[in-house]
Length: 76
Image 1 (cartoon, rainbow, N blue to C red):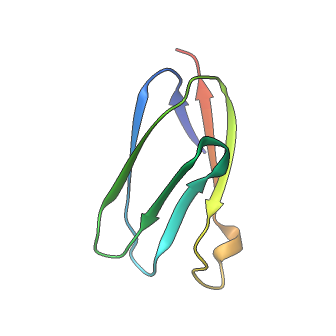
Image 2 (image 1 turned 30 degrees about the horizontal axis):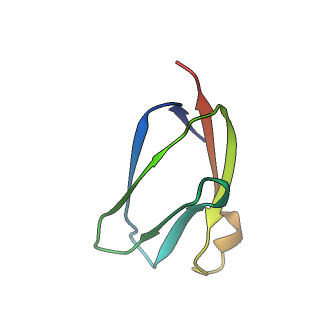
């Protein structure tokens, strides 16, 4: 669970240590690949409070289905 302020530009930086992953939150239109040895980033803006669910969208091994993502957006 990651708690983020709404009405702010957010920058997420991702990498991986094992295989390629893909950090995805479909309802926000956010997707960024996490590659071993590389640092990738994406920016997004959350304009309403709520809970947003995501997942790894790159088949990455036996524990692929156990990689949930949860973003909670709160007003400051």
